[in-house]
Amino acid sequence: MVTKFKPLLGIFMFGLSMHTGAVSAADSSTNAGQVEPMNVLFIMADNQPAAILGAYGNPDVRTPNINQLASEGVLFTNAFAVNGMCSPTRATLMTGLMPSQHGVHNWLDDAKLDEWPDDWSVVAEYRTLPQTLENRGYQTAMIGKWHMGQPWQASIGYQHWVTFTYGHTLDFWDNTIVDNGETYQITDRHIVDFFTEEAVDYIENVDHDQPFYLQLNFDGPYLNPPTNTGPARNRHYESYLDEDFESFPRVPVNENILDQLLDPDTPAFMKNQHRQSILHHNDPESMANVASQNTIVDDGVGRVLEALKQAGLDQNTLVIYSSDQGNFYGQHGLWQHTIVTTPSNLYEAALNIPLIIRHPGSIAAGETSDLFIGQYDMATTILDYIGIDDVEFENSPGNSFANSLLGESIDWENEVYYEQEESRGVRTPEFAYWKRIDSLGDSELYDMTNDPGQYFNLIADPDYQSIAAELDRKVRSFYEEYSTEKYDLWNGGTAKGSVARPGIFQALHGDQWKTVSESLPPFEE
Image (cartoon, rainbow, N blue to C red; front, side, top):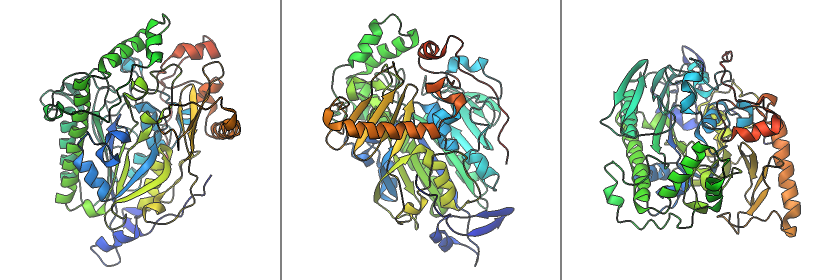
């Protein structure tokens, strides 16, 4: 593994001793010898793959504000989600831990909300990014989708708290909001517009003399049924109706999906998802819907960045734009997530995510980076960049790439790891390799130089056996180090909340195997 990088610069006094970020932040100091603390704005889209954005070369989907943000900062071409579902990836972004460490292996099922402990937050027992910042004088806010436990009260170090009650998007226009303890209904606005307005209000009214961390989790573009199937109710939908959508694959429905529909053992929930996906697939109105939802998110990005500028905060705010994970939009005959096939898959179309980072005057504008970034790298990088060097995310595989943002050469191991329950994999510059739990599926190997679409599985090709063996060794070694006994699904462990197909783990580990939802003692510094 690479070595940890040296912390960035500066010290200021703000109630308690803490550090600031990049060197050029000192240029914006208002007092001689005093460096301003740096704000952090982390904007996260929902189910948005990198390839659907204009900044990443998509010719069909209009995202001018995200494109502009990329032109003002650095765009990472090889950022990857650790999992194909939102709850695990969000947990990783907050803790720096893999799903096999923090225990969230799949989405948290909204239907079980009443069964969870009243105060359940799935990562409260670990060090988290917002709690770490709160303990060092930051104002902290979470606005948008939560999907990491009970939504009713602020959690893991967030002070300001505006979310909605579901993890899944059932309707963009009718949602129950939890606003700092108050609950009310929003029916007259698209949920992305609502969260945008809340973020703008926060930026305008937060104490500008103290640093803030704002996590803005847009509940869009989403890309999935039922909200993205057929015509859309939003201001951009009609403008997309005449598009050809050449970037959306036109291929037959994946045979794996059809086989599951015919299999009596396929859970009813999954069958319903598959039926909806088939309605979605190759449908021009659904494509226009999906494109328009991406542009709605782009509108929100533009409005929030303008609010930063109007408040005079844009020069001293680290802005990060990313997504929890990607989503298929026709690739391999699939929509939705990596769990839709059985066994689950780790195709790049659903795991390669956008990552754009801007800090004017410190991060060079218009740069592109080909570093391989895992979501487990994000928390430690953010802290390192803003100069907080007194903490460690214990047992995290994450490393800081903060110095690379300042144009420095760094010692970096260019590979990332990801998992989806019965599937685990590694991505290097040349290859993508996945393996499955014995008896649950075969390994897969793809030559990413000659087959970036991952159409030709080379696992049985004799010319690639030594490569497959070495990548298999890497995966085994990584998970031996970065999994915990309690949550290691491959070795009898459990999962928090839910898994896609609990029956396969009961068959492997015994009928007594079950998922857990328990409140554990919270992390304390």
